[in-house]
Amino acid sequence: GCAMQELFSNNAEGVLAAGIDDNETTITLADTPGAANFQLISVYSDEFQRATISDLNAPGATEIVRIVERDGLVFTVQRGLEDSAPVA
Image 1 (cartoon, helix red, strand yellow):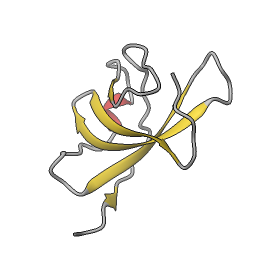
Image 2: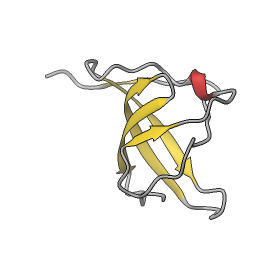
Image 3: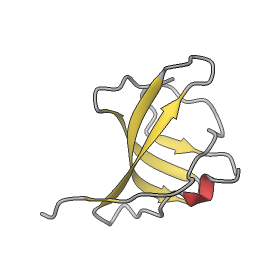
């Protein structure tokens, strides 16, 4: 198989549309400026993009995720990359 290709975005940021637990792999963003700047990724491609989830109520609590699919504002992610703890 081919190695996955990492994609990058400028000024991509978002706010979760609803809270998540530490096992959730489907994340929906609110429709805010910057949310549409993430790369469009199909589950059928060998592409991914990294993102960081942070908790504004817990400064310093961050998690690195791999976005493996994006459909509009709905993202499918792999959680807890690079030894980061899943944020809930």
